[in-house]
Each structure stands twice: as C-alpha cells, then as structure tokens.
Image (tube, rainbow, N blue to C red; front, side, top):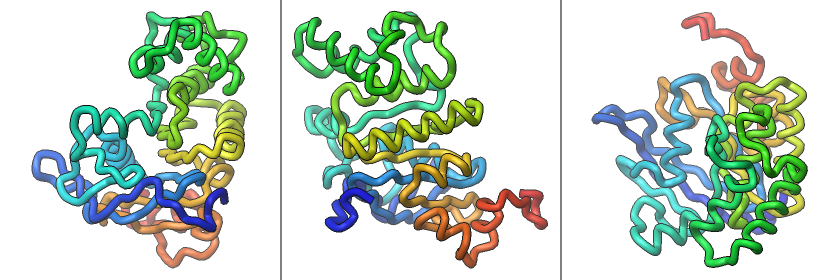
Length: 259
C-alpha cells in the first residue's frame, strides 16, 4: 500500500459520537485513514455508514469527539479556514448528483469557477483533462440524462477531482450498476489511487468491489453503534472471530434475526 511505511494519517476520527434528536447512532469511534490507501466503510443497512460519511465531509457536527483532515478539525473550522479544509477533498455522492441542467463539462468546471480565479479557457482545459482521466473525454458536451449510470458516476468523480484534492470520498460507488460497469469503476479507482496517489474513502456493501479495491476496511454494526471489525478484508473474511463479520463476508443470513 502506498505510504504505508510512513503511515501518514490524512484523516483522524477520535472518540467520535453521532446523534440525531438525542438518539446515539454511532458512539466513540476511533480510527485513522492513511495517505494513499483505499479505505472502505462497510456494514448492514442502518448501521451508520452514511452518517459517518456526512460527518467526515463536514455536513454535520459530532455530538462528541473530533474528526480532522490533515490535522484540522472540519467541524470547528469557520470561514476561510473551513473553505481551506473543504478544498482538500472531493465527494462523489451516491446518485452522482450531477446538475441536470448543465453539460458534463459544465458540471466538472463548476468547482473551478467557484474556488479559483482561473480564466475560462484554463477552466475548460482542466475540466476536459479530468474527463479524459475518467474515460469521458468524448462526451463532455452531453447532458447527464444522456449518460448511463456508470458514466454519471465517472463524471461525478471527475468533478470531485477538479481541484486536485488529496482525498476523495465515494458514497456507494457500485449502487445501481451492473457487475461489469461496477468492475470498471473499481479499476478506475485503483488506477487513480496508484497514479495520482489519491486517498479514497469508499462507502459500499458490494463484496466484489470491497475485495478488489480496499486496502483496509471498517465494519459498522447497528446494534453495537460502532466498529466491530477493522483491517484487510481478506483477513477479516478468513480469520475474524466475530460471527457477524463472517456472515457479512460470506453473505449468510443471521439465524437470530434473518440478517
């Protein structure tokens, strides 16, 4: 894994607790994400995967604890300091979340228009380069409605890369895609991680994707409101002592609650 010898922690989650309307969803989570790795967040429905992701990208403030990116607390930062942190990462949302009234090129150009003073010609050139990097150079002028689900997600990744972040968050990378398209996206993630040294944080429950791309995973559990497993996915599949972890990786239903 890239950077493992130095173990530079680009993200640190420390005694993190999330709560909605006084109800604790996740409690006292502690983990680090190292620069250059593909880190995957796993777990069953309602375990808090999306909740954790939303806190990591600064949409919500923790009920307790801290989340830092490059040592900076995203929830505590305000004004220019917060914008500085937000520029360090990009996000691909579950549906792609491309703006339907804008072309693909315009979607990818948007962060550059918002956060830089580059002239329009430079912005257009950079946006074209990002689209080429994800295999969409030939469809820059199409509208999102003219693209397949996989192409929309590639376009969303290109937009997330517009400002050259060190860190990308991908929410449900494979959701709604056929196995071939999903596998192609997995290979894109690996290519970007290796060639551009981007750190990826991926929320997914698709086993083929997990085993293909993940250097490390954490597995969340709804009942325990926290992490029940952390490590290499193959090692957890083969050696975990936790029945819930083994069931997840073997796709077995729980005899107690039907899964």
